[in-house]
Image 1: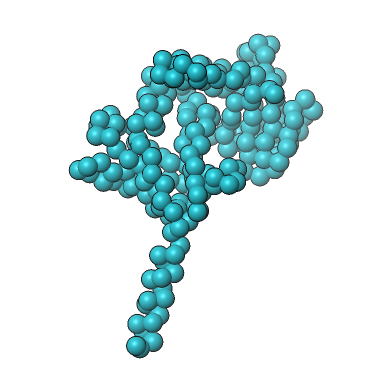
Image 2: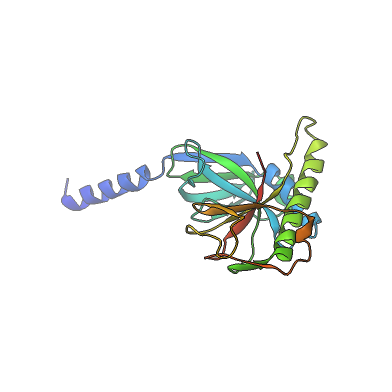
Length: 216
C-alpha cells in the first residue's frame, strides 16, 4: 500500500470520526410554535430552537450538518454556531410530516425551545422600551400556553415577573444598582411603573437577546 493511499484513508477516517451522533425530530412541533408566533403582532418576541449538550445544557451542541427530509424531498438545514436551528415556516413540510435531522460532533444532544426577544439592541434602553419587550414576551407566553392547553391539559406555564438580558461577554449596569448581573446575564423584575418611562438604563455592552425572568 503506497503512502498516498494511506494518507487518504487516514483523512477519511478522521472526517468520519468527527461526526459522533445524529439527532432527529419531527418538524410538526416546530411548525405549531412558529404558527402561534406568526399569528401574533410581535416585533421582537419569538421561539428559538436550540440543540444543547444533554449532559451540559448550557453548552451548545456542535452541529456538523443537517437536513429537513420528507418521503419525497430533502433540503439543507440552516443553523448557527450557538446550536440554533433556523427553520423555514412552511405548511407543506408540516403536511408532509417532515423530519429535522442534524449530524453533530456532540455525543448526545437535546432540544431546547427558548422564548426570547432578538433585535439590533444598543447598550442603553429606556425603561419604557424594556417594558414593551417584557410585554411582548409575556403575551407570546400566554398565546403559547393557551394553544398547548387545548392539547395537553396538564401543561402549565410559570408566572413571568421580569426580563433577563443576555450578553456575548460579561456585562454590568453602569448607572443602576437594582439589576442583578452574573456572568453573561443581567436580570430585573418589571412592574407597570416602567410603562412609557423615559428613564434610561445603561449597560457596559449591548445584549444579544432578552429572555423572560421567572422569580423563584
